[in-house]
Amino acid sequence: MSGRLSAQARADRIDAFREELTQLEGELGGVLDDAQRQRITAHHNTLLAELARQYDVATTTSGRQLALGLRLASFLGALALCIAVVLFVNRFWGAFGTTTQVGLLGVGTVLALGLTEFAARREKTLYFAGLAALVAFAMFATDVVMLGSIYNLVPSHQAFLLFAAFGGALAYGYGLRLLLLAGLLSGTLWVAGTLVTLGGYYWGDLFVQREALLPAAMAAVALGLVPRTGLREGFGAVYRTFGLILFFWALLLLAASGVGSVLPLTTGGVEAVYQVVGFAAAALVIWLGIRRQWNHVTYTGVTAFVILLFIKAMDWWWEWMPHWLFFLVLGGMAVSVMVLLKRVQARVGGAQ
Amino acid sequence: MINRSVLVAGAVLLLANGAILVNVARNRAGNPDAVVRLSEREARAFMPPEKETEMMLLLRLEWQTALGPDGADTWFDRARLEALGFKDLPAEGDTASGPRWLAGERVGYAVLELAGPAWERWVAVEQARRDSLKGGPSLEPTPHHGGPPPRVPPGTRASRLMAVDLGLDPAALRGQYPDRSRYLILPANFRADFAPPQRDSAGVVTAPARITGRISLILPGTLLVPEPLRDSLLALGAGAPDSTTRYEFTVKVGKRWEAWVE
Image (cartoon, rainbow over all chains, first blue to last red; front, side, top):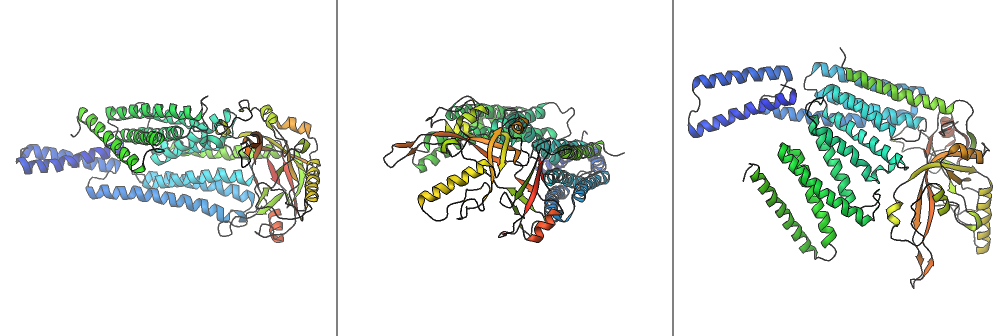
């Protein structure tokens, strides 16, 4: 078993197998003789015990529900603690001298790092370690931002490189997907800020010059497509989802408004180019998602495709068409997309 | 054995803090690039809301762009923009491509002159305007980052800090403006502004479309007041929303063009 996610998936499959077997036997009568049944049951019990021992996976329905609750509580707890750190610093910072301020920021981050390691050693599911790691990330970000504020430094996008390195180290070290997301977001801002700066502009313009976001998005998707070698379990899906959402977000904004593009075209020309690219990319992503059986990829592609369709519909018809008719046409388009997807689903062997 | 990632994260923490502190030390080492004495007119003290922050006092630089030659309202014209690298400005009167290139702020260095010729010229122009109107007190210039201008005689409350030049090479600018007690050179963002043509009620163009430059931001914008100056200013009542406290302080700019308060 390569990791905790795979272990949990195997436990889920065993549970589903048992349920289906019970259902099947209710419909057809006995399908396994006693010896086979005992052999399978014994094997599964041993396997589940081993998975629970090695990976601390949930082996029952209530266990899975509890695990989901723990994940949610861990995330919300981390979020609350991060906000608490930032508000605490804002509230009381002025009462300390500069040296104390600098010292406290560094020591706080080191303590949170120590807590992460401590929790990771005691708990395989990493709920508490994940929480502590996110707090460490927030403390580090606060450390860098507050140092900049204390010394009146000119804001720089280079800070995002530090955030990406810090978040990435913790993410890969412990297999924490939320930290990977934080690192990816920071890395994206650094790459985009660097590109904007190289173009002679202020790095803060990266949200105006949205094309600067595309290289990082494509790099994230590419990293998510490479075989799992070197990647932590579940990281591929994070790379792909993050990259695709970022890619289509930037593309949709450019398709809706071409202002700020580096393409030597009029705003209308820029919008047309990105609309065409958007449709092509969405179609490609849907195909890829279906082919590789990546639901998250398919869903992202479908969502982008539909939004692009709506943008085009707005361009073509909103001004002159009665609004009731416009929305009727939109509904018709949505039904057409559904029919198209059902056909694709039928071709690849899904439900009719 | 400690997870290697914790060591890497710790190293990043050390590197970040070390790099920042070394750069601050390098900036402040030796003789500063500028040492300028400012008053409450040039830097308004403010505190974040009391419930959110304790005893943090910030100074927000107040400045305005100096008038141009021959009565123009700014020296930052199209020619200056082109000299600063705006190569693709649309032709005069081209209103269609305005939004296309307006996006984007560039980075340079602004020269801020304290109570110098630019300020005196502004006061003179304002006084002349006031005299010609035979009116009462005139408007103070609208300071950047400030609220609505007070109706007071010209030159009594307004910031005397005037942005008189902008360039890409701060050392070259210092060569042009050698007085280190009068001229601050600070990082600044600038952009091109496109003013569409003005028309009267009959639709006749009364003023053609115009392209000018604009300094949009002096960086870092606010300066944190360190102890013990903070405590002195707070004791005087500076930072309160309706404060009329008068104060002076010294702003220094270091080798890396970063400012601090003393």
